Length: 373
Image (cartoon, rainbow, N blue to C red; front, side, top):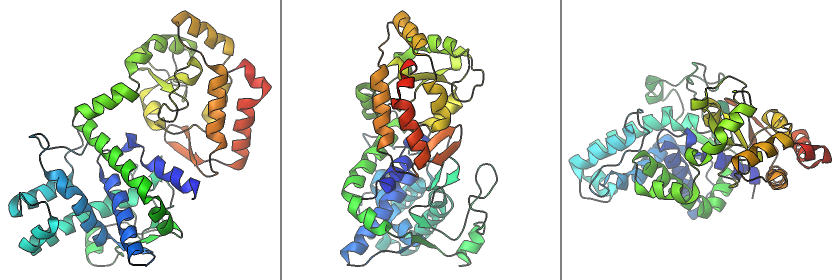
């Protein structure tokens, strides 16, 4: 199995950038439609946006049921409710409020169901379909291609070579309603389905629990997470060591707004040793999320004097792990595939190159690094 393909999918599933659950629905719909094709003995090379919309409605249909007497939100606070979930809920309430099968509702009101599919299709055409493969502001096509583009928040189109999407042009058939899968994607999605489906279900469930402040999320954070309060004892000492500046961008950051970040992400390896911690401002910390760092952030990190970190850890009664942190980082980078997106700084991602991988491994394991982190 192509490890780079899997790594890219895992990057897409990093929930820190999700404001709704649309990306999860899109990925599951792609998996389901490829499995259906494989079941017919056919390799799937194209998928229409209407096929995706119908599958998305089926995925969201049970989500419109009340959970413990309450309706669940699937968008972050301040982002407005998910328009897809709202449309399905409205249609279901009018046609079949107690029916668990969308197919029966479609038979009861075929025209209303067609309108629902049209609405969901348009939401996905302008939102997750063109955005799914945009990572850190850069497009990384590894699943499919489409023949339209949309504008990013900056106002620039994602792909300047393609026509901009408009509802009129799309409905008039001037823009193809087709996703063209890249070579090998069908086989990879079918082969990984048994692993990806439960992972996406778990991620989706966790995000909804977070959005609705449900105890499932609180319990997971309690058992496996790392709260800011846990890291408070070293926030000010690290902030002092960095001269009151964000480690990543170098900008001044007030102590009250400073956040302690794990250079080797906590989600990849639960390591709280002082050598794995830096202080960052909120935007850099949010931008980095669960990405591994590229050479640009790693160079100053590796250059930190070990003596200073030892003194800081001893004063704060904090654990150290110089050799463990470096060897764990080396393992993480050694098993990376070239092309894997690495975080370069706020809003910047670029794939790992062979030369960079060799430099990182040499820097982590060289004797000269023994005096630093």
